[in-house]
Image 1 (cartoon, rainbow, N blue to C red):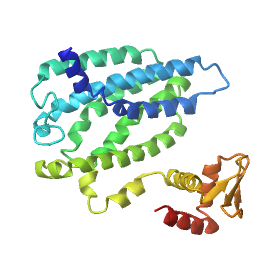
Image 2: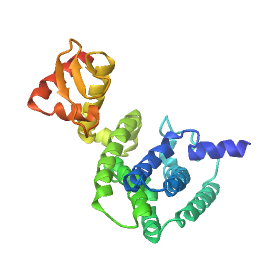
Image 3: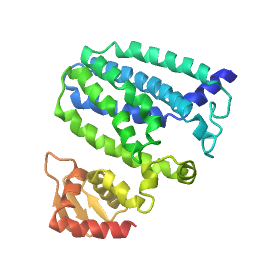
Length: 287
């Protein structure tokens, strides 16, 4: 039981957000590629396989990260008690776990078509070299974005067996999504990282983090969130049939086009000359 607890700690399986951040892009790629008018069995099967692969590779990646960072981790308050850094488990035994996890992940990978298998094998250098990036560049979070969202393209190819620019567009956006959230995450270690001498976007943009994070995130997502919050607070209202936005006094703001999501349409309206003033007013009221 003690060894099992140690394994869970080593692989971070008690913190599922890690493997979910790896799985979500895979799910996006599958959803983008799948024609839902067809039988959903293949879609659900691939979802299951990619989920298992995400759990396994995230676990293996955590161990490799801890092996490469063991001398750094002992100097950082947040990481000094990790199993390898604290000496609870040896590097040799940890490498055995990495081999077993990767072997099982490979068995999952070969269930897909040849192009997906090639893409999966090509991702290995990225997956296991990420921990080294912070020693050489202030942009390890960008490298993490490239690595963590790689499954999006793999998922697309696993269903279509072809390459296309469609998943690449989403992949490019997802990279900046990761760049934003991991920069936020990195702020907790700034003091220790600067003393040790490792690099990150958190350190590079520490004087103006808000601007950098805003620039790296999807503007439309923020605008949709603004619209949703305004409705929740009762500042504006959406009719029951989801076709018209109104002010609380009943004055009409806009009609939602029949082929658009209401909040997506309002987000686009915020970008117009009339909508900019409304956006500024709502932002002021909600802050």
